[in-house]
Length: 214
Image (cartoon, rainbow, N blue to C red; front, top):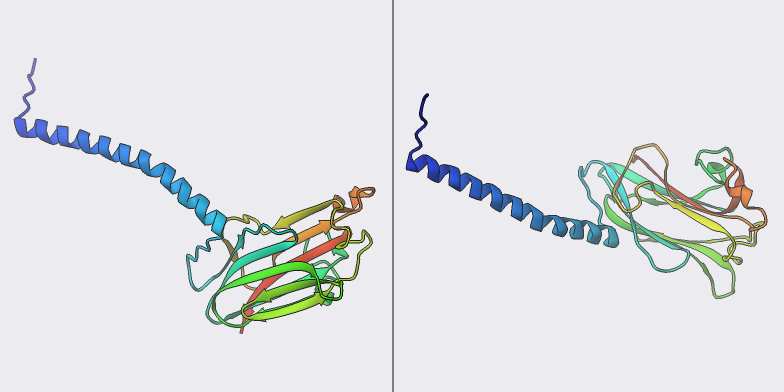
């Protein structure tokens, strides 16, 4: 039966490799909670991860006020971004529904770079409800006529808010394609089916973006 012999050098090398493996395992175990903490902090602050500066990206930024929303958007060189909005009589799903884009208002971001987009529904000095939209140094105020449910005056009625897919994670903006930032739909509590029937119009606010060539 053959006998195996190990030199002292081999034993030292094996021992060092085992020790190194254990050290790496312990280091990875210690870093795991830190990675999760960093990921949580990025989500809480709306960190925008731009993987390719030649592409457009967007991420939702957390807010703590009612009817207030924010996004961080990257516009690549050679592109411009249109931000569209429609108030009331919006479909419960879909953007390119007939009649929606025709009556949408918009502002543009022609400059490349990262921009903060802020939207809120507030009363002005005369007690009239308005959508306030600011992006890329441009701000607009759009009057909101009360809908069938009385929104936004009756803000306590049943409502559901849908943000961009992967709201807390960076989402790529495909050029030429509409990307929903916000769909805030409202219905009377006595007629809740209006938000469950696919495509049926309802009160609320719809905001989307489209990235196009200059």
